[in-house]
Image (tube, rainbow, N blue to C red; front, side):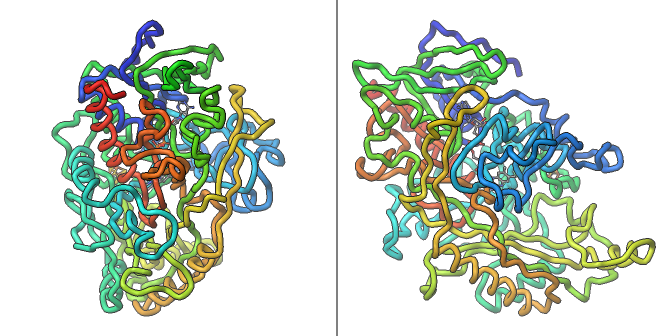
Length: 585
Ligand SMILES: Cc1cc2nc3c(=O)[nH]c(=O)nc-3n(C[C@H](O)[C@H](O)[C@H](O)COP(=O)(O)OP(=O)(O)OC[C@H]3O[C@@H](n4cnc5c(N)ncnc54)[C@H](O)[C@@H]3O)c2cc1C
Ligand code: SF4
């Protein structure tokens, strides 16, 4: 798709900042409403199929899929021992990547940490500055939230309720399901509503054993609800149905776009309307304000290659740069009328920052599968999801909220786990015999939204483009640590009940940020004194400013956020278009 030139003399109906899940959805919905939209993306448009090379065999890659020696991706220990910015100490590596950039296939998708520094408390911040953002490599677990999440305060007294209920967003979840495609199986769970599913993947032998055993404990294991299309999408010529080729097991995206990514799922169809102008390499550094009205008037952006600065105008500004970058941008946009940053009269921008805690999990072996013929288990876009079971009907004495587990089992191109020792033919035989028998799972739990967990601007450190860096003030609290303890115990208990031989139990809590589900830095609410946005993600202070990504979340729930980000965004953009047409913005 060809990019259009930005018309600097034109006032666009809307400028959308960022082209990931949120920005792509905003571009899609607003252009369908007939608005003239300019989409600004800080990163490049990468030849993403050439990056991902999903069908490349390991022996065809000079580094067997690993990074070349001049590249380094941060390890758990480096995140823990060192403080951000993480460059010092890794001088030998020309390029430094986050932990997710550890393969040759995603190295150009994630940012160079040195060009994009941040400071403060330890944080494994994963960023993808390119067209489509993190959706190029996301894990695709696509879950809905429920009133157990939206009305969590009413249930346990902590935090705030969302200003919406499940019934407000349900029609938009349906629209996202139908437009983008999702696989799964209906379970009729009140705390994890079903989607409109396409053909599901199949559970394998060990997974069915676990599912049956859990059912006796009143717990639910279901097929991975993957944001991919298994039946195909007749309305989208840029995407293919899933062929289950086995590449999903590799960290990285899907080069036939069966898995949702924002460019093929949303942006290219939006360009086909003729209403979308796309400008990549456009680092937005400030949202500008009309000094008379205090309303947003447009943005300043820097061309990331030439360093030239541009100004462009619009009737409405839609911020979708991802939770932390959007907060940064609001804080950067200070003016006489908005001295604390834009949309920040409440002082809540950057605060109530929340996400998911990860680490505890278990690996086991189904003894009855040792030595059985291998099966094709990496030809699936995911294994299983074990749904939340804590603090639903009963109250846990040690912590509030819940957690779920993601897991999988079976034969893959590279054995997922092995406890074999030695070398030579005997070692290979041992690995082959056992590899399909392993099963493992890891937990994702809700981190409570707390005002004291926040980001602000570093007064000294700047990024490659001279833009002040973000500074973190963020730590897991007691509730999270108590929950992590329980995750470890229940994981073990469930594997024992299923009759698996436990080979490894992980109690280690991974560094803050590891889940890549950052949320909440401009939360929505009814009270402008304690929230930044209203229920339509519209700023309480600046009525022609919308923040449509995970920033708006009031709490993190324990379900992965992307399907909710896109559903909320669709709802808000319908409202935006309506308000604009009525002259209310
Ligand atoms: C490896 C991995 C696995 C994941 N697995 C899952 C999963 O299984 N399920 C799930 O729900 N979620 C998952 N996620 C998270 C998911 O990718 C995000 O929730 C989603 O992409 C968020 O969308 P977004 O639009 O807010 O941000 P992004 O997708 O990050 O897009 C933001 C875009 O804004 C651009 N931008 C930033 N700053 C500026 C600026 N100043 N000017 C212009 N543009 C800017 C960025 O370059 C980027 O392209 C995963 C993420 C990763 C990396
Ligand atoms: S299993 Fe399906 S979604 Fe996953 S990489 Fe293969 S084709 Fe894409």
